[in-house]
Structure formats: C-alpha cells, structure tokens
Image (cartoon, rainbow over all chains, first blue to last red; front, side, top):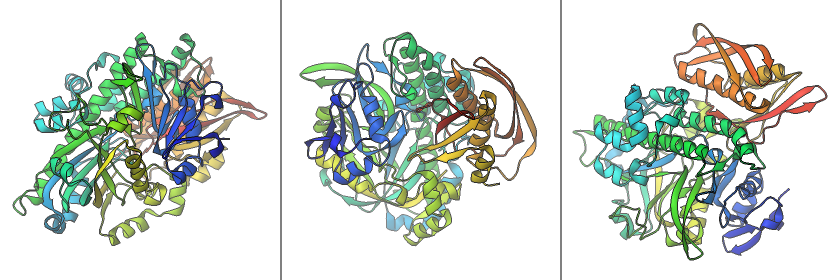
Length: 483
Length: 142
C-alpha cells in the first residue's frame, strides 16, 4: 500500500515516487498537489494507477499526474504520459473510451442583468434543442459518406454545412481536425453508433452550463479573449459519444493479443499498448483521430444548437447575445507533439487522460492572435461550483509536456453520492442559489453533486502556483443542463 | 426490484469506484459467470418501467481468452441496447466452447436508451477460480 513516505518532495507542489519503488517502473512518477490533495489522492487506487503508467515502453522523463487526479481504469484520471517516437507505445486504454472528451467556451457581450429575466426559457430551450443521455440521437442522420466526411474533416465538415464560423475553427485545438484520420480503420459498429449521435450531449459528467464571469484575475489577457466581468458565457463538456467508446473497445480488445505479439508485459490489461510505428499502432492512431474529429464536430454542432437556442429566446429582446468562441480543448487524447527535452527537440506521443494541453506563449501551433498570450485552458468545476479560464505557460512546456489539469476531480463514488444526496434536494439547493437546472434524470444529478468532487479552486491554485497554467478568470454557474 | 436486491439474487455486488462503477460477479462455470455478468450489467441502471413489444436477438461472440470473451460479450450487449434503444432482461447462452459463445437476448424496445454505461473495461480484470466456481470484478466506464 502506498503512503506519503513513498514520495519525495521535489518542488513545493511536485511530489515524486522514484523508479526504485517498483521493479517494473521505467521512470519516476510525479504528482502535482498540495498537502491536502496529496492525502486525498492516497485514499483510492489512483497513485497505484499512476505508478502503473510509468511502466509503459518508451515513456520519457516521468509519468505525471495533475492535482485533480482520481481513480480511473488503466491510467488515473489526470494522467499524462509521453512516449518517444517512433518506437514508444500508444495505448488506447490510456486515451480512454470518451476520445477527445473536451470543453468549449463561448462568450457573449450580454450581461447577467440583461439575460437573467429569460434564464428559465434559455435553460428549457437548451434542454429541448441539445439531446442528452448515453444513447441519445442528435439532430442529423448522416449517410455513410457524410459520416466519413465528419471523421476525416472534423469541425471543417460543420463549417461546410453552415454550423460553424471560421473563427470557431481558429479557436479550436488543432483547428478542430486531427490529421491522419482514416475511417477504413473504424469498425462498422463504431460507424453505426456515430451515425445518429452527432450533436448530442451524452450523460455522466457531460453538461451545458450558462455562466457569469464572476472575477477577472488578468485584465489584459481577459480583454484579449473578450472576457468581461458580469457578462454571460456558455460551456459545453462532451466528447465523441458511442463512436469513440466503440473505437476504444475495438482496439483495447484487439490489443489483448497484440501486446503478447510485441512481448510487452504490463501490470494492468487496460494499459495494453503497441509501438506507435507498428501497423496496429498506426491503425489505432488513425481510428482515434476519426473519433477526435467526430468530437470536435459534435461540440461544434452543439455550439450551433446553443446559438440557435439563444436566438430563439433572446432575439428582439436584448442586443449583443451572440456567442463568440473563446476556445475548445480536448482532455482525452494521444497527440503527436514536439517538445524540448534535455536540450533536444523530440517527437513524442503525449497521452493526456483527463488532462488539458496548456501550450505557452510563443508556441507556433497556436493561432497568431493567441500566440503571445498562450493557449486558453478551460477548467470546468463540478456542477454548481466555479469554473476557470487559464492560459498555458512556459512552465507547462518545461515541466509537463505542455499539460495541466482538466477539472475538479472526483472525490466520492457515484454509488456513495447517490446514497448521501437526493437529486430532488440538490435541485432545490441549486435553485435557492439562483441556479436553474434541467436534467434528464434525478439520480444522474445526484451522482454529479458538488460534494462528490474536490474543490476546483484548490486544484486550480496548485497549477497556477506550480506555474503550469495561469489564472485569467473565474466563472460561476447560473443554469445547468445535464443528461 | 431494486438494483441492489437484484444483485443479491444473482450473487453479485457493486464495488466502490471513485469515477466509474464496478461490480463483482460469480458463476459455477464460465457460462453462468457470463450470464450473471450480463444480468448484473443491465441491473446497474435499474429496470425501465415501460417498453413495447418483445425483441429477440441472436449473437455470436469470441475473444482470444476468457477475459476478452467476457468483455466483448458485455460490450456487445451495450452496443445493441444503445443503437437499437432496447433493454434485455433474458440471456440464453448456448454452449460456451473454447473462447466463443452463442446467445439469445430477449427484452423490450424502448423509446429512449436507458443505460448510463459507456463501456466495459479490462481494468485489473482476471477471472479467478474459487472453491464455488469462478469470480471476476468488472469496472465499467460511465
């Protein structure tokens, strides 16, 4: 059993388990946390899962975990692993089932005061127009050719159909399209699951939230992102739906054999991986890119449905309700990136499982208008609590392969949350705090209760203080739509 | 019947998991373990109160070992439930030979899919021999 004694404190907010801890570790395992978050991380199996990821062939420097770490399957949620290409491995279980689950932030110049009288109507319109639930269908029924276009082109396919503005794509990670996608490596089952699900929210912790900009920490950068105190913002949190789940299932199942073929021994079957440059590795990467593109297109279509909902309710009543995109980020993905390690520029496969890319100022992959301030990082809190906008930093490039945290991080199991919280009571509590809720299921609402999560402000403070992201603004919810 | 009550009748139990859900399932042999795992999986969400017409589906599943067969079998049930908006409550397994099975699923068609489960994982999965037969702990992504 792991304890605090197994950690060495290497910086104020960085704790390390040396590779001598277990024979199969190839590199150290690092955790970003303060004292309290470290103690919390030791209450479930998340640190063991972090140590397990340090055994992946080709891993470089260290396995990293963010302060929102919690127990997942295979990787811990909040884990970052970079493997050196071409021979380092890619792990489908490391990316997880909801490939390119991510967050999009839209911002309006309308104020809370202007929008508040219409909030109930807005929440109802969002709930009616944005389908939710695990198997829910979206507004489009795509033919095979149309689905393949989404898988190959991502957000570009939505621009072509009139569901996006060009600026949306400019302010999306990878411009909303991962190169290398090839639907020939996506199974018929995955196609079938994706055909009807584009433009749907899903369930679990996925949501649409209307927020108030509650506090601005960096006026200059906030102004560049059009973020003004007391204005309205909208967050979308969802991913690649059943199509992504199926692609992960297909390759994790297939790699149960492949891992033996490559002589790879791992401590957990969910970590199965193959060399990136192998036929199997390339096939998974091309299929994963399809799911990532589907997720970008999904959030884009949802953004369109949200803009329509705002127009439906607010047109002719207030001005300036248009929603402009701040950014869209992924937090479950394996990306091919170049990083400077030990004075050398290396090509890496960076797995982020419940972690966000946080590229700092000067990064050439950022659009010109963001290059001098760094990439916007969007950190949603738990339902009813604050969310944060941050930017990527040079510190993240130097310390964490350009990565930071992705949310609050769960503290309590879903079963326990449902035992201690009644969905209806929670809805009343949120209502008393002025938060409008529309939810598909009361038990689903209880599972996502704020008490089931860590304090997001504490998590964000750690990444800010550790220099792996910079706080820009805090958002407070005023309406929540959940599957 | 509540999920917990149904788990007891199946000899299954839900296991604590921070982010997702997990359950332990048992069977006197592999066929019974597979059947109990399917019944426990669909019981995690509780039984839907309504549904039209009886539906039957026949499926064949294989895997390169017993654990892969178990995961592929459960994921196929989720796939069918979610794509066809159906709920299955009867699982009739034919002979389980080698790492292959044939089964008939029976259930109802629903207006909306009711499952909250995204996928069945291989996390620390091992089918263990016990004095009474077989046992496995399965983690599902929600």
